Length: 204
Ligand SMILES: O=c1nc[nH]c2c1ncn2[C@H]1C[C@H](O)[C@@H](COP(=O)(O)OP(=O)(O)OP(=O)(O)O)O1
Ligand SMILES: [Mg+2]
Image 1 (cartoon, helix red, strand yellow):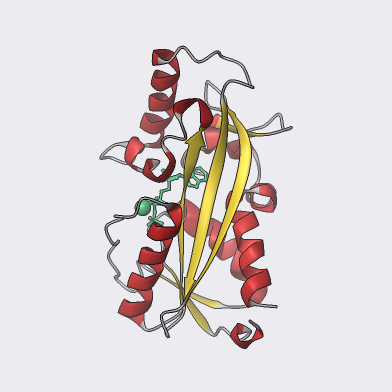
Image 2 (tube, protein in one colour; image 1 turned 180 degrees about the vertical axis):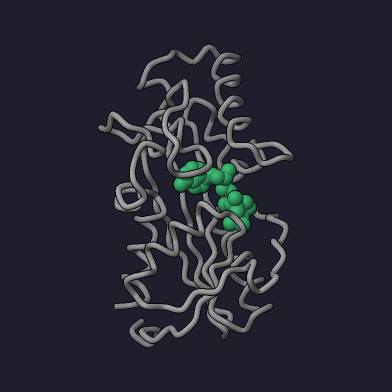
């Protein structure tokens, strides 16, 4: 797909500042000019899909159609294995109407209590998912899916990152993703892994 090597300007089609910062940092070495959905006054489309792929695609297509520019969208979330994969695609909804990540993190703890999930690393495993969709002006869409396995810890730790990072500790690590620098998180994260796959697919 070397035809996409030249990418003069790209819309980063997210309204989430934490994600936008990480995506900007990952794009930085490529010298791509970035405009945000906010700068273009794009509204956030309703996320009606039932998979990360569907939602990432609809967000990217909405932005490419509104702007005429290639658009990169992200749909992501946390699947907690003892909760049957919840909240998954509905991770943002679990933050409640005010979009407070602490509300979502507490909800996971409440669900663990209801189901009497043991307070051990092996019982409280979870996976972060990130699907990136890059939509081109001809409407074709490249999709990549990155994951990061870990454990839900409590109480939350760390002030970095965003969203559910303070309660997520990657496998084999002693720190949560909120206790890492941005570069450390991006090097191992679901979003970082998806981004590497996108680069393989589009920029090589
Ligand atoms: O690295 C992460 N570290 C912590 N939490 C994360 C991460 N990645 C996704 N998350 C959480 C945030 C939100 O609760 C949900 C994404 O929801 P999602 O609909 O994809 O994003 P959003 O509504 O915040 O912004 P937008 O749709 O405009 O991109 O997963
Ligand atoms: Mg969203």
